[in-house]
Amino acid sequence: MNDPMLMLTCMLTAITRTLHLPAAVADDAARDRGAVSIEQVLWYAAAAVSVAVVAAIIWSQIRDTASTPVQSPSAP
Image (cartoon, rainbow, N blue to C red; front, side, top):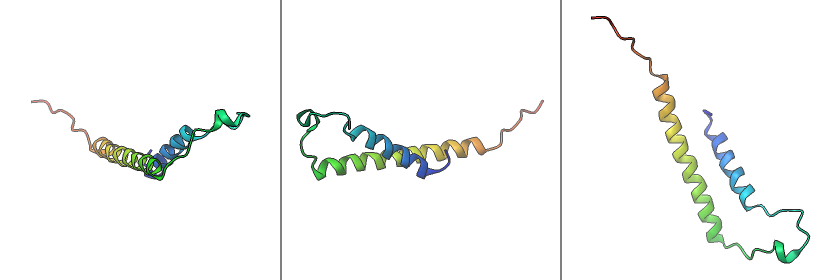
């Protein structure tokens, strides 16, 4: 998972699947959840971007720490 684009795609997929309405529902009243405001969309987008940025920062720190060579202990 070195690619930040992969993490962003995963986050967008998770949000899209969460907001997706089931297609098999035949009753319109059960499917109607009301209008979605632009403010809600922007909050979801901001949350997704912030989670992706924090995950990318943490992953880069883990990768940098893992790439440093380990010093073998020397005998006294």
